[in-house]
Length: 138
Image (cartoon, rainbow, N blue to C red; front, side, top):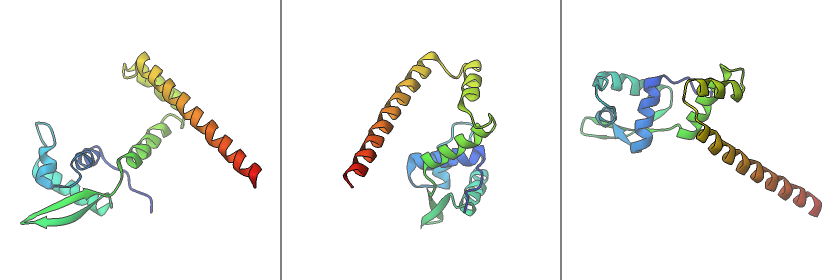
């Protein structure tokens, strides 16, 4: 079943849960900077996340339900990134240009990205070599 889209507030709540691991609605609310959303706003949104199968109740302490995230942070980030990329025709270059124009992408960021890309390329070459070697021994 595909995961439904998440709102900005839902993502912020998930971020609080990923940071805490497990938390009550009050603890989630306290993770927000001032001015915080109302307790009932957080409560309603957490219940929606529960309906979307993004969080679950793990136990109850007195009157407080304790929630934990079901969706992983990296999976959620990948999905959100794919969604954002779709606005740029699925290509990273126009998105990166937009980030640069907005002052959100520096030359240092690009240098770090280049290091990551070279590392990934090197790893892929090693994996390809391992596969070719495994086939030749069969």
